[in-house]
Length: 331
Image (tube, rainbow, N blue to C red; front, side, top):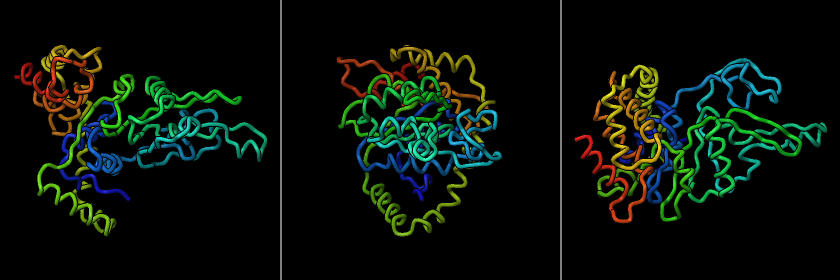
């Protein structure tokens, strides 16, 4: 049982970024960096309630949508059914076998045959993979995630096994910047990056404590109190998902995205693509049929702050640099 997403106090940018990935997973993952105890893990796990269920083949560990998509190594499967969108936690101490899958020792001992036991990447297919304290993740696991994120497929070849299965997921990571930085290769795989901080006013801090205390004392009752707000938030995400493909982004918006990325010195074109997709998802959430400059302005910090080159002569943070560029380019 999770804390209601609609009941989270403040942290507007974090909640918006997670909502945009729920509307369009093509936006990419979300990286949430900030102080301890600011609701990072709570928000990610609460997102599951806003995600619509997916159709899966019963008995398929990879959440395949159709019988013809089920990998060859999977045994008997049933009919198509619906299942909540998976949100899978990847613990820091997870071994490579637990992440990618490995030989099923029980089947080998009991039946004398080689069988594959799926890992966390199979469970996360078509859903979310969440890593808390991602900046402390071991390098060999980071390398695995980079390979799978690029190909969308998990390949396991060891101990006489040769297995592959789809592994397409939205990667969500959280961490405290004081505990170390993220490797640039992994940082680039996140579509959006947000920064969170402790509430700055007494009233806001009191409200956070009040809501959390009420939830801890009666989780079921508290969720019931917020059921209507949760249903409204879920309906908004579902409606935006259906509308996002039809949202038009004109050449003026494309030029805004390109000029903004050039002004910030963003490498490659991933910044423009993420900016465009995030702005389109925001327009769909707002009920608009066209992407406006204001949509680009609102998503620019979260889409670009982690793509900036370091400037030793500029002491301003990345968020401030993006803000300046937005004011200059999109004035």
